[in-house]
Image (cartoon, rainbow, N blue to C red; front, top):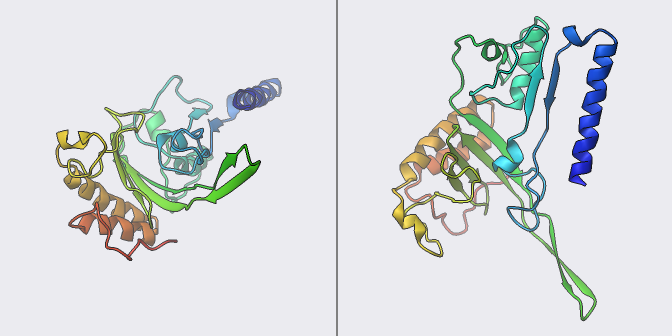
Length: 252
């Protein structure tokens, strides 16, 4: 089914490009290809398939821009997001979106030196819907619902800190040594794991607090007060591994 969907999308994109060429508009039309969200195919758990977490499976999506007069074969090394598309399209049309959260990509595409963001701020929600278990001998099916929790994350191109509201899990990944985001460094070396492998790592809490402070500033910039409060709570906590009993993070 996934291969069929990709094939259908590829054919549709080809029809658009063919139509632009047939009408003589290919040289004056910008074509932007991207995706709203990725898909983790239940890799992270047996329930959550869609792109609702802050893992790269969900948030790393394609972005290809073909514009009239633009450079060919340029691959940007900077951290960009879908919120950069609106300012980019406006700039292509000769307009300016001064109050947009994103930035125009045209200077980067042209190779012009420009100050750029050091990190990306991410909103998402970890959704866990329904799990089903069967008792074949009795012909019964049991349905269990699992909670969802809002998440915020900051990604610097190397480190990604994911913070979760309520009973959700906090995580820290070094995507240079762990691009699949399978080895959670949050709380090392003090967080207990089955094999106690985190005891071999240095204390990650200074990095967590540094990233949380930066996350709070980015959240304030986009008006996300809940995200800013969550990040500040982690940045100031003496022991981010433990939350006082009966005081869950506020939910949106």
